[in-house]
Amino acid sequence: MYLIGIPLLLIPFAIYNMIAFLTPLNWTDTFLRIPMVSGEQWTATAEDMLIALGIILLFVEIFKATRASSRRGVIDHMLSLLLFIVMLVEFLLVRVAATSTFFLLMLLELVDVLGGFSIASRAARRDVAIDEAVNP
Image 1 (cartoon, rainbow, N blue to C red):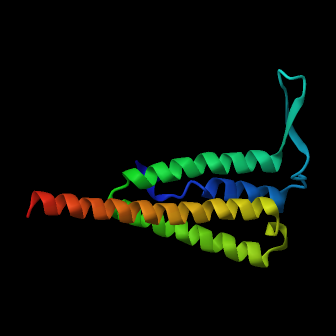
Image 2 (cartoon, rainbow, N blue to C red):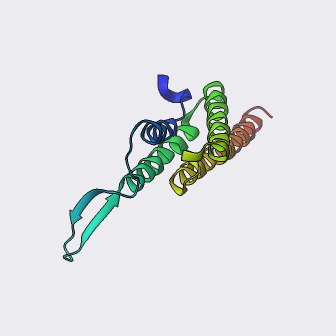
Image 3 (cartoon, rainbow, N blue to C red):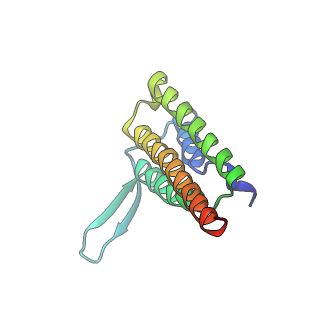
């Protein structure tokens, strides 16, 4: 799979930057209305949809971390860490990125980085334990 080394959370990061820098979209405008069985209307904003996309992609990233080979996994983790650093710098230095939406996207990326490294280190320990059991 060729996309294994690309952090998927780059997608909501890019969407956020395209909307924030190129369009006058207000993040809190209603993006979607769905009538519920209870009679209420569920409304979602653009920021809600972007965060939902980020959560779904975080699941895929964690799943990728459990399946990646060692070389591809290291590249994936390094690119995820680089993306987190870029997001942190943008959050601290760029005015349009100083929002709760961007902060939550950055937090999702931090979970991706920490989760990816944790899963990789646990898998490496398991591989060493299996190798020691097979080759005493």
